[in-house]
Length: 327
Ligand code: ADP
Ligand code: MG
Image (cartoon, rainbow, N blue to C red; front, side):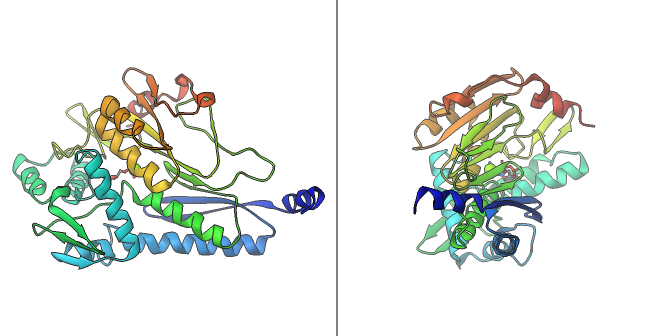
């Protein structure tokens, strides 16, 4: 292609944006396409794929494959559920169970506790813990097996990142090479917008944006979802050791080649905390992380965090102060 033709091809692309509710949040897609008709088709296909994943992976839906699988002691898995559970089990093994997709009984208790503004009793907690734990779940071939009955899966810590990856894959098959998928704290994007060097990703509490292509960025923390009992704030991320929400206030952001990794790892290192979280991140190739220690208003970057995007906190958007202002 001559450089003039190449320029024309780029100039012919226009930005389009669409938003739909899925997986209990809003998914927003931005893409570059030649005309409105192909953009519309692309949105339809990408959102249909996300909806399909919600049907498969939801722990809120009685009919989802995820829910059905936990009702049997052994079950064959679809490719999607297999991918997500395998990644979950890998993360559990790498983090000594800090990340754990079998915490369903505990995340369900957390939701009840938040509604009732009351912590579960020690007995109830103990019973839920006895039905949780990644070592009681076994993957072999394309199927899964559980050691005890009444286990419940919750892939909420990883599903949105995977859905973002899959939406990008659908768009790519339709010839859309430059797109961004955002689902609350999870972002994934393909090639840079035409004429740009990359996607500019602003992280709320940091004052310098990232400029990235073909990567994913996920943020985890308790700023948006938490509840307070007796002056203690409990995150919606569960500490598998206690069965209760984390009471530490760390916001973690991970940059990784794929959304499934960025999402899962951001949740995992939120549980691991600064020291163990950093040690885990430094071992992963192509992965970087930032830890925002809310109480100390301090941010710590892993070695691979892009130098140009290292910065101090933006005081006005300090996470802890924001959440303290909540009723
Ligand atoms: P969000 O879903 O708010 O974007 P995360 O990606 O960090 O944030 O996922 C939090 C969700 O992950 C919880 O709502 C719950 O469904 C699930 N979860 C909670 N604790 C854990 C844990 N220790 N390991 C894996 N998943 C968890
Ligand atoms: Mg996550």
